[in-house]
Every structure is written in structure tokens, then in C-alpha cells.
Image (cartoon, rainbow, N blue to C red; front, side, top):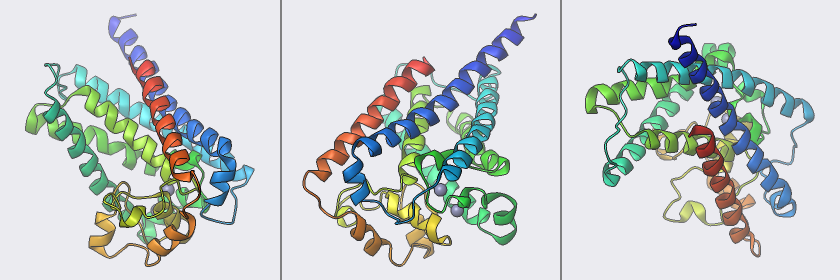
Length: 284
Ligand SMILES: [Zn+2]
Ligand SMILES: [Zn+2]
């Protein structure tokens, strides 16, 4: 067989391992932590309704379909890079530039997600593609990739489109900045679907209150038509789509509980560290 086939097979194995790995590790780590800190998480559960076995099964199986779509997108992006169309920077890392690249990609994805999500909530698109994600009225971390095939493609499209644009405009970005973007994306995604508010009481009035919480996305699942944002609250606030009771609902679940803040912080740090360490091992 010609070398190119072996190369494509190698890329396929790496891409699927990476896309499957980050989903399993992030959703698995958060589920374990919520279970280990069961008393704490029960006190901070956002809805009284609990997800059933059928919900977990649907979320997991449709996430496997999304992994396949993401894997194909990753392979296409890697092949575009091999062909020199998508460019990555191999020069020594200039850290301020690295940070700028990472922040810019997160901000661009937040805007892309908000407007794509608004579009998916139009009548026709909702029935055609987004309804599947909203079958999770009480989401669990496993709902992070629970999309219809069409939604998986629109979600996946951002990375190759963004990398192509950056390659044309700025000659590419650092591969590790792309990796951290992907790690941040899955971590925030599973946290948004946790069903348990992990952020401390008073978060919304603190200096980082513009970072979305689990309550923010949970309200989107339980009530629809508000809170379309992903990482930040800016777009919802600007476009008047924030849930009118967001703050009230957040304050109801994020009550100050003895030691709860440090438990939540430790849990988040442990989950994030596990994700980075294992993903680095898979990606290397
Ligand atoms: Zn939605
Ligand atoms: Zn969701």
C-alpha cells in the first residue's frame, strides 16, 4: 500500500482517539467528581427532576455519532495542514502571542456559537436538527456531544474555518494553543451540562460574573428560548436573550455551604488537571 494510506490511517486513529478521549475523560471525570462529592452536589442540584437511564443512553450514543463527525473534521484539518493550506507555527513560542491566539479563538468561538445557536432555534432548524440536543431537559455531563448529525457538522465546522482564516490572515497559530482551545471547549461544555452548580455563591456579582455558569445553560435546557451563549454572558446581555430570572435561580442553588467552595475548587482543578494530563498523553 502506498505511504499516503498508512499516513491517513495514522491520522484517523489519532483523530478518533483524541475526539473520543477528550469526551470520555471530561464527562467521566466530572461524573466521578459529582458522585464522590455526592452530598455537596445534591445540595446544589439545579432541577428537582433527575435524568433517567434512557437519557444517559441517548446522550452517550448520539455523542458517539458526534465523535465520528468531529474525528472526520479533525482528519480533514490535519490533511489540510499536511497540504500546507492550514498553517501551524513551529517557531519558538512567543508567549504573549500564544495567549492572544488562545483568547482570540475562544472569543471567536463564543460569537460563532451564539449566532449558530440562535439560528438552530428558528422553527425549521429546531425541528430539523436542534431538537435532539433539547431532548435532554435535565442534562448530564454526557449531553456535551449529544447532537444530531447536522448539528454535529455545524458545531465541528468552526475549527477548520477559523484555522483557514488565521492561516490566510496571520500565517497560522501555535498547535498547543489549538489544543488548549479544544481542552477548554470540552471542559466548559461538560460543566454547562453538569446539572449541578459548581461555581461559588456570589459568582454573578464578582469580577468573573460574565463567565457562564451551569445554571445559565441548564435554564436553556429546561426552558429554551433564552441563554444561548456558551462561554460568556455578553452576547445574551447585548441581544436581550438572558433568562430574566438567571441571577435569582443561580442564587437559589449556589448557596454558601461550609467548605463547599474549596470542595468545588478542588474538584474543578482535579478534573481539569486530569483532562490536560491524559489528553496530552493521547495527543503526543
Ligand atoms: Zn438550544
Ligand atoms: Zn446543551
